[in-house]
Amino acid sequence: MVIDGVPCDAQSGRVFERDSPGHRGKVVGVWPAGGPADAALAISAARRAFDDGPWPRMSGAERSTILHRVAAGILADLDELALIECLETGKPLSQARGEIGYCADLWTYAAGQCRGLEGDTHNSIGENRLGLVLREPAGVVGIITPWNFPFIIVSERVPWALGAGCTVVVKPSEFTSGTTIRLAEIALQAGLPPGVFNVITGYGPEVGQVLAEDPRVDVLAFTGSVRVGTALASIAAGGVKRVGLELGGKGPQIVFADADLEAAADGIAYGVYHNAGQCCISGSRLIVANAIRPALLERLLDISRRLPFGDPLGATTRFGAMVSQQHTEKVSSYVAAGVAEGAELLLGGDMVDAKSGNFFAPTVFDRVRPDMRIAQEEIFGPVLATIGFDTPEEAVALANGTPFGLSASVWSRDLETAIQTTRKLRAGRCWINSVIDGTPELPIGGYKKSGTGRELGRYGFDEYSQFKGLHMTLGRGQPWFEH
Ligand code: NAD
Image 1 (cartoon, rainbow, N blue to C red):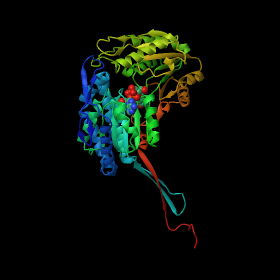
Image 2: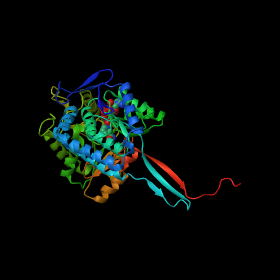
Image 3: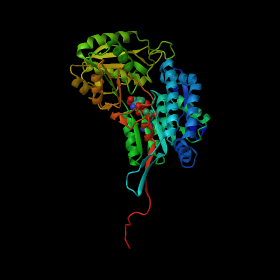
Image 4: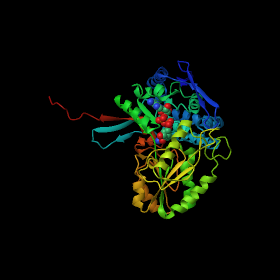
């Protein structure tokens, strides 16, 4: 762990191990099993660094210089970080390399923007009055992250929190803690003062929950499942703590009859198989015009049959291993539920090469009804549910017809159709003729049960800022009591 600028073990001395999900029986990580006392120590360090330390008081320019150095440090260690990320998550090494490079860009963007964090002035509230809105850092931020994109998610939150002048305590997933620890070390080397970026490792209920409970944490930023997110939000509500939640999704991919079918088939495959389907913004529901359904499915099945998946270290691997055996079994149980409810299994549905790792075959369902579990619940695996539509109104109703609203794609050559459809979608991140695209400039976040709050862009800084209204009276105003 990293607490107050010092690498340390858990106070109990306990550790836990991570087996590579793509290489059965190989231990690829050993980390301290932190507990409440370790979390309390990290929160004390972050609190001191915020209340008395230099970081919140530095100019934006000084903070920016250090964040730029972190970005450079990430690029310098790209090979090592990508290998750790690949072995702990099971994602292909080539994909992990791309993700680490993207993370350096996230840090660079936040480094640039944090020089321009402005407040506001109100010069028309009366002749004797002037109003200022002061932007201040929100305080100590507790950040809890999941295992599917450990380095991206920590890099979508930490540079924005630090850029706003906050200090942080990060609790990465117990499956994938390695790159978050390395990131804190890189940040220290870059000149970040001790106590500003702390990392505690271990299991959620033991070490993570304290971040929701402890009143010294001002903001809780959680990315993960709806179940854990809502439980933590209700604990935080008891302390009137600000909470940002990035939760699950059930992304629709609407394909209109005029779409470029080759591009759409490629995008549908990428949308559902990327990261073995363990993506909060997966396009896991194909909502396709009935007129082109057979033609699109034929192309999609062809890609799905030829897709190289398996060993994360393989040079041509397009998707690797599932995070754990338990999760792989959960995906299997969703396939069984789909078959039992009467959906037509066109391809896959099984674990593959289970002796080597947690691998699951590309899986395509057709004739899915919108009320089936495979159409409503987040499976988090390479499993596509296909539903046909006849009218644009029907497509929008189907797309919006789940408890989630994180992402959505529309495929059409007609920009008017695409934009008018996108306007009606209740999702925080939409794409026209693409999927799983991202850039630091644009906000991300959920509608409905997919979450609250926005990350990235200039919106991301507001999550970690307080806004203070300052009323100034210029000259003597009307007396309250005449005497
Ligand atoms: P999870 O909710 O099981 O775990 C997320 C984190 O919470 C982990 O660090 C875990 O240790 C911690 N945790 C678990 N119980 C806790 C508790 N009682 N107190 C405090 N912390 C606790 O989720 P996961 O399985 O790691 O990730 C998969 C989920 O994350 C999916 O639902 C996915 O959609 C979601 N996700 C969302 C986004 C997004 O941006 N919206 C991004 C990635 C993943």
